Image 1 (tube, helix red, strand yellow):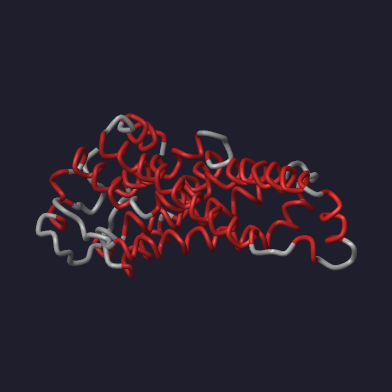
Image 2 (image 1 turned 60 degrees about the horizontal axis):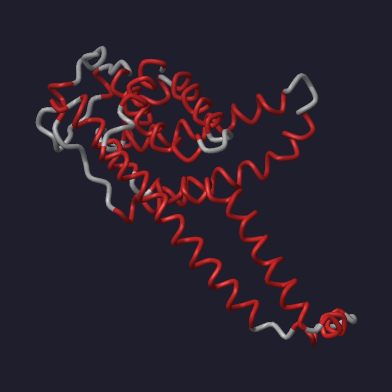
Length: 258
């Protein structure tokens, strides 16, 4: 895993990976602008001075100062929400382009494999939204267990990394594996090496909790998992027919060339 991570970090200067990063940044900014424009439009339609339980009367009493206070409150909320939500939104947006990351990694390090199955934009979008949704839902359900077990020798933290290590490791593994193998054989290979994949996922989960670093994490994670996938032993029963003529020839019964 260390070797895979080192190679992934060493390629971060690749223009193709930088292009994915800027797509994520620009896409996230556009998403926030649209979201806040919709919220502002909805809030501007509310008759604040007519709210019940004397709330409207209080706003009416404030007069022009209410507009100032409301603008400051809305602006402050935007800044806080953007700070906390930007990494999550960027992860979702970058997830649409992770196939480009894998392609850049394989073009540089594994050109003998030829082109992999191309993932469509629709599939990429669906996979990204599904991934964010599943991770968010599972963590919301598990949150009480995190809190209850956190003070037991940090068990809650361990539980957090185990759960998210499994989810993230599986998601990024499938992103890479489905490009080169059928889902059935890819699942069989994952089960045979679940420990390595889960450990890699836990490392990614940890990186996602570090500010600034978490913005780059999806790109690094996809590149790292691609390298890790290429190094997994491939028993004969995992190899399936692929549209790439050189793929079966490039795979050995042990591992790809290192």
